[in-house]
Image (cartoon, rainbow, N blue to C red; front, side, top):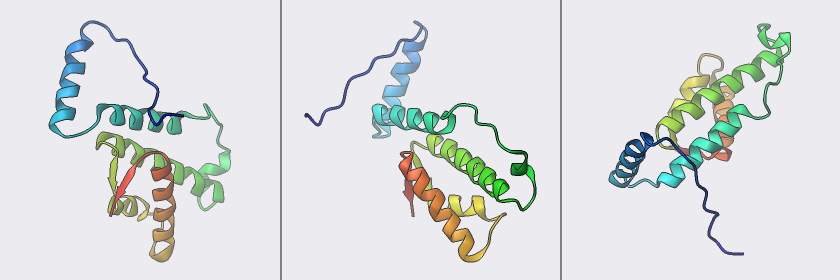
Length: 129
């Protein structure tokens, strides 16, 4: 099996051509791969949207309940994933730590940030320390 990936195509309206050209120019200027940026966005989109429309239990909104903790983790994860997408797939470690700060302290905060960092890495985000 070859190390090369499959080539994909997409279509856009005629007016999009100028935007696409500008995107490629910016990628070249910033020494970024346009393909990599698109893959990061697609992977993040799938992580945020899959499995569809799961229904949260009402306990996810009950203060102190374990379901509330899971809901908050998912909301923080989605927010950080969006931030990373806006920054070319990179996210600073301290940003993750800051997001969990209002909810946890001490080692629990560091542990939660590490867990979020692993999830974000699996989603294609590069964590900068």
